Length: 480
View (spheres, rainbow, N blue to C red):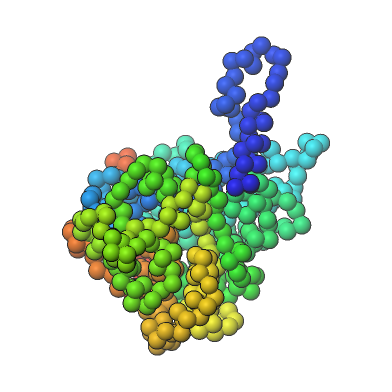
């Protein structure tokens, strides 16, 4: 919170400067025509966090798709109706128009406004700021590629090109990995970076190195079924350079306790007075069967002082079922971009696939579950007891099932990430929602209607290249 307040104070001080020139009286100081690079960077971070954290049914319905939450009254989104509210358009715009565009503007301005007191370039800080911004752009493109498949990439972010071509997803993905390598290599821990304008790490370059390598690990494992050799090289390189080693490394965007910079879930559920989201019985039943200590941290008790959820796609009584816990609905609850638990699950899988990352699959699996329980407010004793249960003990013969199901539980409140991992690992084995039409859980998002109507030729080429613009078209990384 302190980081945000300091940054906002800087913005207000800049806007409040005085001058004796009468012409300046016509300048709107609250809406400056020019903004510094760090303002665009901060807003780009916020755009990303809001997009992946939100629960607004006009934008982010991934908690419903992943069967963590269920709607009690208006069940269209629980049944994967993406078209009525143009959700696939909204996600596309949130990444391209908002996050990526803000980050690109930051990159354009950094060489111009990151200067020493004498006006000369502050080369060390410029280099770090550019590298961190580049890492954030790679992060944003990762979600676009894993959501839609082929996308505008090499032609993207050029506002003069209104008809961008779509790049092959695998080719763009490999280019992102090269960009990520270059950005990590350019990070210099002996120089400063964004400081308080960086809401995630407060300008800590060493933590950004860990984040970059952890993102690289994630991206390497994402393509493990599609290109095992490439995945092995990427993953081993990332781990040797240093990934997250504890919850202290978690990348979280801090929100404030009062508007406008509040947790978007609080805005959507609490501030708006929405009474429609309850727990889905899928996750409730799974956690109950394993005596999961995170149950009371994820959900409230129901009307019978127990825990219960509504089947996906079905309407029901709001008062009858467990609801998201008040902690996650707090205005200052942070948005998570990447965490240590996820890294440890990835390392467990890497060992199981024969990659040289150190440790054993069992050790990393235990570390992942423990990290999740501790991060949610549980204890070491609870984690130890939970992991010792026969239904939780790691079994290398069924490693995809074990890792997939436990990772799904740990990724609660990170629906987009969970959706990607469910498609990749094929666990847990979820049934489609009750009234889904067709009876399939989406494995990709269709392209936006606007692209179909305006960028028609490039849209048609992209749809043909991936095998059709349907929710049932598997993307290049989703092989099984």
